[in-house]
Image (cartoon, rainbow over all chains, first blue to last red; front, top):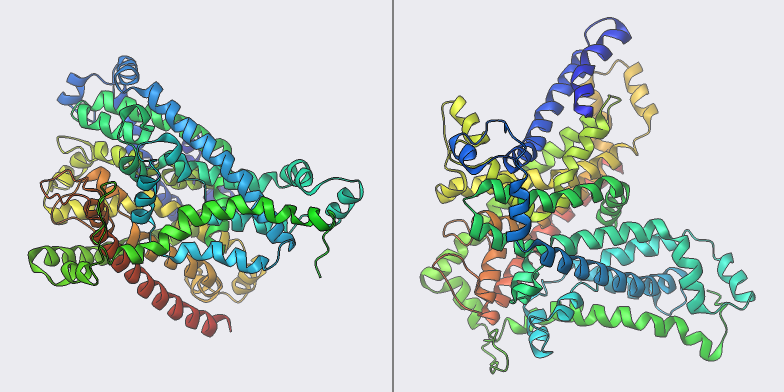
Length: 288
Length: 309
């Protein structure tokens, strides 16, 4: 919607302020609009194709659709086994993120407070993981040895750790005043209850950031499911999409509808939580 | 030093006990396997459960680098990884900086542009890949039409290996420029506005302001972005999987490791589950990342010291 206003504004802005043409602004908008086309173009193509019929796509791939053909979505939903894949992805993402967060806060809190010996050393150990060789092969051998190959529980286990999240949590917890600990302890609150019922709610922004960052990673993961999950009933949506592409690769309208079904919840999620995603990325980048 | 308020004696153990699960998982899933990659690289491990694993010394490395046609292919993949890294890093860095400076101005609609450019980052390789397969549909898709207008054409991902490779570079940059942009924007916002005003009073042109104020003060984000781009692009290969499959003449090291280790190839080249060999390849990639990363880090730190004192 806002593209409409932006495309019109250069002339208006340029004209009102100094009453002369502001070339810098016009040039800025021109470049931004070129980029906007490169970024929005592929998405618009996707939406357009998803509403077309196959014959009309074959005849002219880029013509604007003349009908709102919802049949593609119905087809994609039924044939792509979407309900199954989406449920799997949801289960993997939610359970791994919850367990991770629970353990991560209990790691980050005592480190931030210095309640355990060698707190800085422990934190360094987490950061080091970012600079070590990839764990792919031994991880596979481990899962194989534990009998967790092609097993949803084993698959979830792979996502129970995330060093950057620990760093973000530690930094945030440092801004929570330590007097709270003292006051709560004086009131007879135990360590466990304090972390769970006082710290968790207080660090909500950091938790949201880490949760969103972690969840996006699991949601989009493609490599690990192709390695660890062989039964189709366990496939997450990413792997399911690849399978669907293999079968419907030449039927772009149906494939586009399937992609759109997968994109829409993510876009919604992104627009709602953009703030947390961006703060997570910048913090992770600067600290990592 | 650090007062602990939640009791002494047994109660003092709570933080330790509750810390253990997180640390254990981390060692089991991340740190341990990561270190074990080195050990596996000296064995002939396969992906078959219960199969014996033997120590083979440096054989995997020797085979990877110095034995016959396969090692020539491996070296070619290594070179391609560097080419990929070079183009992705330089282009993504430059475009990210350009776009960040543009949307950081006081213009209407900058939020919209920012959101739009960042959006692909969260979509993930599968969607990024599928969206571009459609946009680059060779039989009259949008890009084919655009190229036709300019009197040229391309077979895109189905064309010559070098051509397909170049398109993957383009998609990779499209997909990740948003991150570079966001880091530059957060850097730009730390530059105090009176610096700009002072420069303007001195009559500096926009280019002079950028060269003498923005660029030097942006050094921390420049460093972060360069390092992230170099390391990230050396390790990136998911788009190759989605867009091209394991095609000769297009493989990069990351994909090669996956294909040799897990035997999941879509072409005719299959080497099934040679995990010791794949571990050796991982270590070679790791060393590449380490050397390039450390070199960049050293050069950037020296530059930062010179500029910011």
